[in-house]
Image 1 (cartoon, rainbow, N blue to C red):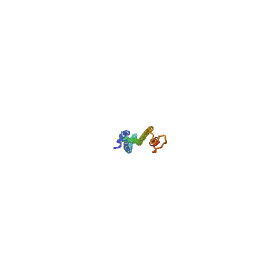
Image 2 (spheres, one colour; image 1 turned 30 degrees about the vertical axis):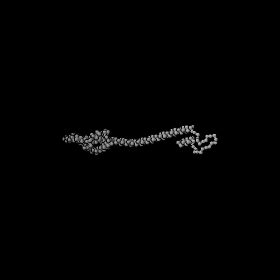
Image 3 (tube, rainbow, N blue to C red; image 1 turned 90 degrees about the horizontal axis):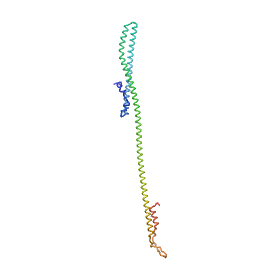
Image 4 (spheres, rainbow, N blue to C red; image 1 turned 180 degrees about the horizontal axis):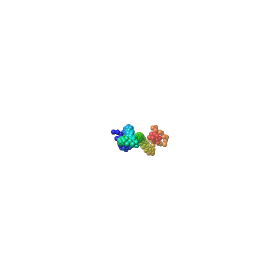
Length: 252
């Protein structure tokens, strides 16, 4: 089957409509472009053949028409010279050559028509290939942009995840620190309160003991000279209280 038999299909093909229906435009463009380039190669090869055929048909037609015109001139000249028989012969041959012109004209018209179709197909294929190349370049650009955006999104998502994890760790650390500080403050407050209560209790007991104390049995309370009783020296309540405070609250 020659390329001319596909003239209608090639001329009716709509590249953009076909691509819009495709589920895989990139693959479709590559396959369609390959097919179009193959068709274009066939068209160019067939066009050369059609050019040669059209030239042969045109030359045959021109020669036939020239013969008819030549016989017409011979017949006219013979008639002017009174050579009626010769003029009749020329006219008879002219009629035969004229009959040959019809198929020659048809052959030329067919060759010229085919050549015109070949040129139309070539122009159409060149146009379709140009559209495909433009669409393919556009598609490649979109795919590259989509890939770049996807990589940016992935990097952004990774950075966002790391940032979120870091924020969570910082929040957890801050919470633990606040809990530790609150516990230390609570414990410190409780110790100070306990110390204050203990000191107040000791002071109360000391005052009560001082007011109810009896005279020391080891001391002579008579009017004469006093004599001291040997015995261990005892710490006064004030000194003992001070020592107790120092022992319970070494910071002071």
